[in-house]
Length: 206
Ligand SMILES: C[S@@+](CC[C@H](N)C(=O)[O-])C[C@H]1O[C@@H](n2cnc3c(N)ncnc32)[C@H](O)[C@@H]1O
Image (cartoon, rainbow, N blue to C red; front, side):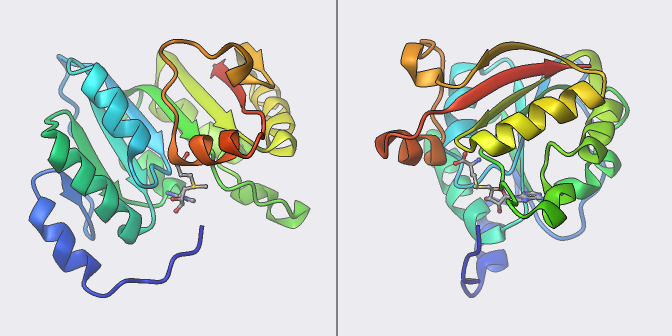
């Protein structure tokens, strides 16, 4: 997703400094009394704000590389008065520097950029080198919840999960055909579903 850089985004994010980190990011100190779920490529925050609202006993961190969309997500966190969400302007490529080993209980990858050209495959957030990073930070029983509209990316990702020695469950190529009551639609999910595009989903575990 390419966005025009809006002026003063970082200054505007300062208003949310109690739960938004931008710039010099320090390793996350986990609250050991709580589970920690992390969303990669949080976008405008529809998913993380809803799941955090439904699960106040769990801490959530959203990682998003584009500060402009983090600002939109931050406004939603603020409006809902959530105290269990933190947003970090951060490139997932560096995720192993952010979390201690096995500190993360669950990862959500929702509609990550498909990078359709074969020469860009290594940039997909489900490429095996990314999975190796996730393996380090995930708890032994930790899982990756993955959703995408893109069937090519989904099939590629299933191959990558297998290459990394992961098992998968709840695999579907049409999540909304029998949509679980607890499914939370992301911005992209809402958009693609309205356009009649089926949503692929699975849960992967090391
Ligand atoms: C297609 S959008 C999906 C947004 C949201 N998850 C949804 O489902 O509606 C992908 C998002 O991932 C972010 N992103 C892409 N690569 C990233 C990376 N390496 N690290 C962090 N965020 C990334 C993009 O900036 C964009 O906001």
